[in-house]
Image (cartoon, rainbow, N blue to C red):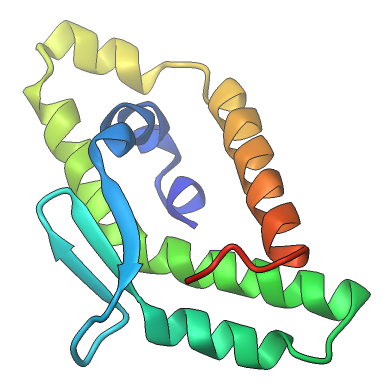
Length: 129
């Protein structure tokens, strides 16, 4: 997950992420298309998830939802990290150092809550195209 891979970038990721527009759509020969801050996830990924989800219940369905979230985070991670680094580099040196010392535990709790809501949505009726 992006926050696990780069914990010092957590404040920068939190600052840069709202600028991204993430959606589902056709993507030629890939699973994600990045154009600036527009990220398009392939509907093929959603179709694969829906096909695997059919007939699963309980813990198996929840595990599949977690796998989908990990896959999506792996796909959006590189452009998000690049934007976070650019945001951080644009800060004056003093603010940059302060940003790196920000309490990451609060950000981790907020991220976990958001991921929990996403997993709940995927575990129920799929929130996919």
